[in-house]
Length: 243
Image (cartoon, rainbow, N blue to C red; front, side, top):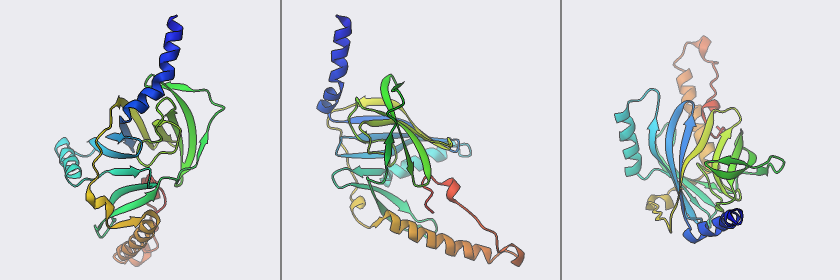
């Protein structure tokens, strides 16, 4: 009898989630040994992904706290608008410090569901595996079909369930859920600045490349003549290796 009760309860989980209509997932984001605590708040129509804490190897706690407070004060986070098929987030161009809102597409990731790999467990929940190549990096993702919301950390989305863990195949970047909270109609407030002064992602990349080339050329001009053919590649330090 107990077995049948458990099966029934498990089958009701997706419907229970849909009734609550919202989720808050806390992630641990690792980049080159630096760890950020991030929070995704999603209601199925839109979501906000923002930093809650940071641990860096070469920064003291007071500096980190001030940086996070500044981000909160200036409404710096990543927004997904599912009906509009948009990702919005603020960017300060590398050299001229000009503030703009980057507009990216939600449909940029082409997933391959690994149906040949058996489901596993993560945070006590059944997860399935998918892989993708997104902007020059290879990823493996663990998503939970029992939580039927197509969202995840950073820009990741598009799977039939919330992404609880995703990492690059070289282990340089990873996003791992540490806590899941179900909430009813979570309040998601997006600052007005997100809907003005937008620049498409690829236009931003083109502009950033141009600025970086100009500034690097200027830097090379300050070096001795025999060192001016030095080449510099910043791609390795970026999550999206497109410039």
